[in-house]
Length: 122
Image (cartoon, rainbow, N blue to C red):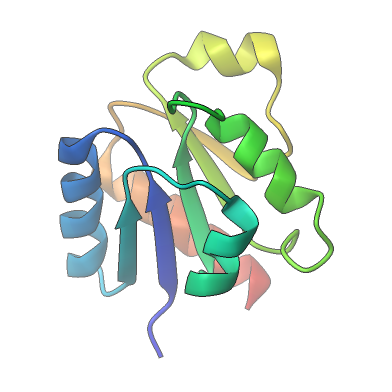
């Protein structure tokens, strides 16, 4: 069974890029431009890994990450936060994410980091 990756980003072009890259790499991918409730979204899609853009309308990606990591049922799910503004994370903290990737990212590095985190939990 293919690993399932959930991607949350409000930039449609970034979502399409992630979808193309990760589908080609053999993952099952769900892309969402926004969500209302991260717990309900995780329950609905049951991802093996989540990639979240830090700067989202409403709740930021760091807060979503913190919610996932503070729940006993979901804390095991690897979270990769992304942002074009790396200083944001340096100043505000990592919210217990497993990895931070700065945009733009190298495709092979992205695939390596996803593989690393998926292999840690399986």
